Length: 605
Image 1: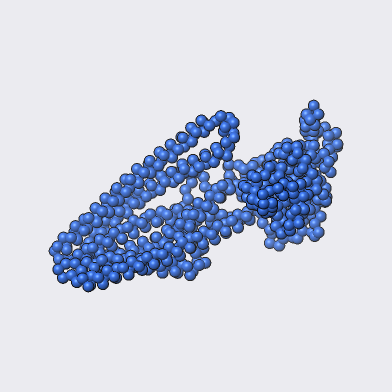
Image 2: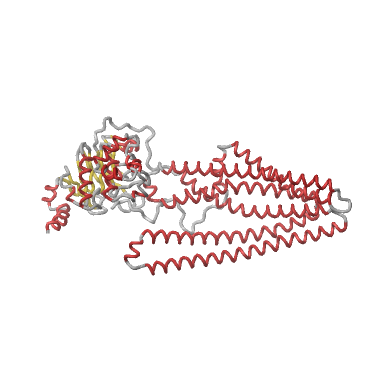
């Protein structure tokens, strides 16, 4: 078992715990607008389209005013009315073209900015040491890369545009209303707060309930994924009824929250309709009396009503837009944390070059190490080990003894709190981590494959490997036979984590990948423990090819696999307690002898 198990009590993780509140301001959006500045041409064209559509929207009520005033009534002129209708149609054409132009450019900006942010975040994530992912959930990071970037895309591609358009309409419309009928405009400005206040109050409540509803839906999704991925266990233990009951309870909780959301939305809609249409009715009533008295024209009251509706809608939309901007600001803040996170393991300013050609020596001297999430328990204590070039060293001991930690430190995924680790005589902290890892090949306990073709999984060890090199590595790893039988050979897609292959086949691909790396140091983490006898024979034969002329460290629980090692190191509670050959350690009567008695005694019984 890997000794880097995560701890839910995170020490310095980025993610907020439940109950913590994030700051409610728009400053984090500066990161988004900074990304937009890379495309000034598209921004300028989007703003031009925005101005055109706002102006065209406000011109429509003015057009109707002219139509009504010139074409209706006893003194109406049909020719003049026709001219103003043509004017209206022209405005509609301009509005349609401007809207299409605005939609294209703001949507382009939204997609482009999100693509840039995702690439920058991923680039930084690939630089961060594994310790970061021990303290911060990869699932949470994945959520940021999807849901948070989707929020930003909506903000750039829609929300900001809507906010600017409604601001222009609200300001321009209000000015035009004062020009039309100052007295009615003052009355309308008194109605607007009656619209904005309930929108704000109900909007906050609705957003809170909507978030709860989304959480409940997410719970359902998580439950479905968990149960379906463990269907054999569910059915094997006859727990279908219990799981259905759990699912029913989750669905009912979701429905209960949804009912609250529906009730709030219904009340919200009723109040807004009453206030808006009631206010408009009162204004029209007042205006109609003014028309009868001859103080204003019929076209003026029509233009006033249309413009007042646009202005009221714009103010109402702005309150909703502000909430959307706040949510986007929170998303931008969370992504900024990932962008600005500095790697805990990085190359020094002037790294020392490793000797060439490589020798393959590895040295641990007085190394003490605590994992970041388990500072109270040391994983290694004053550990010293010298591994000579070409030597095969087996590392054995109880689970949690520090075996996997040795591998983690050798590849410099972590730095020890004290002591020195050297590769070919160079301290790892003074070398470039990429160069260090370039001299090490690792075969894990279970072959980790990617959702890609067999060819891409193989050449992960050496992306520039030729076809001949790939097949040579496959033959040496006893993988060529089953690879040739795949439907499309090396170009066959292997499924998520290589699901189309057996465990032994996945492991042989992992060995072939390590062969292609052709590194002087080989790390084997219990590479045959999960295999059946036939697969183990094939994999062990492949490992024998892989270990030739290489410095090799082997983690093993099954002692039969390491009896031929040049040296066996015995670990217990992070300390090196014994080392020697199999025969020497078996004769010493220590921990190794007890482990050997348990295993070999049982096998011969």
